[in-house]
Image (tube, rainbow, N blue to C red; front, side):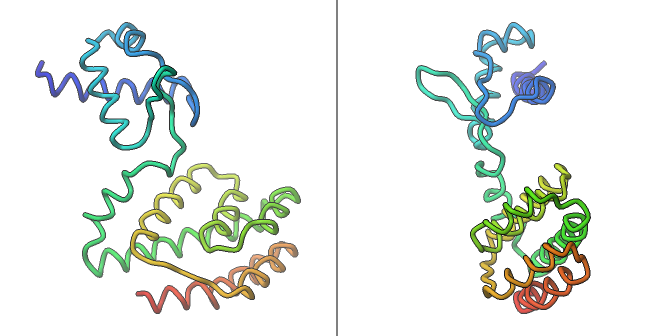
Length: 200
């Protein structure tokens, strides 16, 4: 087996180990020696795989402490991919269309699943497009939707800057307080979708 193939297989073995162990941002990874023993590969392959993960910003090494998981969204992978993927107008249009589609779904689910605690977090959130809608997506209680939205938003912010008027957030909060999906979608269409159509 070639060295590159061993390194790639080691990369995916570490990835599976992270998932199976349920490691979260801030958690410490086993040492190189422990990983090599557990995965039954050479330490050089482990070292190269960890370098790749660190290059992507998925982990960080703290001198004298060890290697730790980094929060999702802190890594540079999206920016690296975005600089290559979002070259043409069609790709940018698709990005806007997909983001709108996901956010409309999230608004509907948030209205159905919104707890008083999550509503309070939304009401207290600093009113920026990203932070406000992140709270809404979190209110759906759907982790996969959150991950998808975070990736889309990272791509989107690589290309566009969206600023919404304060009345948009005020009207959205009132709709959410009433758990009115229709009103929330109407506010979204009036402010966000109109803004997006100008960017498109």
